[in-house]
Image (cartoon, rainbow, N blue to C red; front, top):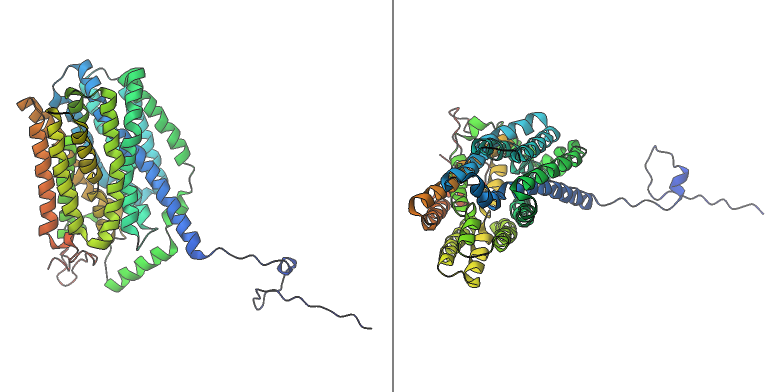
Length: 460
């Protein structure tokens, strides 16, 4: 009887490729490309959010340091809030430079250099003996470091991994501001209570150095490459639209750029006319310092909901309706805060936290998304950094202006009125500029080739 020969054919057969011994075992089922790409995109989003959290979280703690520093240096409020004005102005001025560094030198150098400068500024601030040194270190030095690890590089990286869900991703990324405030406000207050404001700055600075060591070993080449599907779709869309390479001067010739710039200016003015002095205001209204710091942190915590929600709602109801809700809540929350000095009741403080806090930063995801879509490719990071110059100048004016108004009037109400006016101007932009209302912004701003000028197709 002849033996029967059983031939086992591999399940996955490729012509011209001889089966190996491993082919005879159970076949390996590869992970679906969509699942793998989603996990990679989420990982990039988490990394960028954590680093951005450090950037703005530590910077925003200046409100916690305001009273301790003022007691030691015995200076008026405008001079002290001027430090934060320099910080915001530095963020705005350095953001385009940070974008160019990211575009030219890559993510590893941008993040590493930024964290190093940020940590050094905090450590040296602990030894400051005069106010001008705090202007230089807390104001300018921290701003340079924060801009290089903040939203400018993060938004560019995230936009390379998300397409249809980009507004939601930008909302989550922007929530790092609120998360940072929520985490670092009580930490800063506890460090000040135990070590003084100098020890607190020193401790945070060394913590940044530890974070830098971790960040430098991340696979930035793979992160910066982006999703192949998203990058291919972006190149195809650019080719179909006949778009040319974007540069900062070319973007500045479009009305979309200046509309986004103005939105960031007025929004930042509105926010920082309140936030820089809110802890001092609450303490002087009878709230204990640690509880005031906790309220400040709660404002950051609830802002996470607004930042993420703004991106999600924009996909469903449009930018104008989101802006109306956002700016309206900001004005109402500021009014509630103004009443705390007369009656520091829980419901007034709660109304401020929920209304003002929830909407704090909710305009940022809209601007980041619109900038990424309209100026994709080319020097995208530098362009978005130039847009953020509006945030820096508005924040500088709001923080310094509220301090100057306090010195002039002896009260915080004038600063709160300045905040409400800024919010009203931001809302007016969304109502009056067609591009911000979704009636032209859906198409990428495209430089005109008919006359050789930088006028966009939607501008004409």
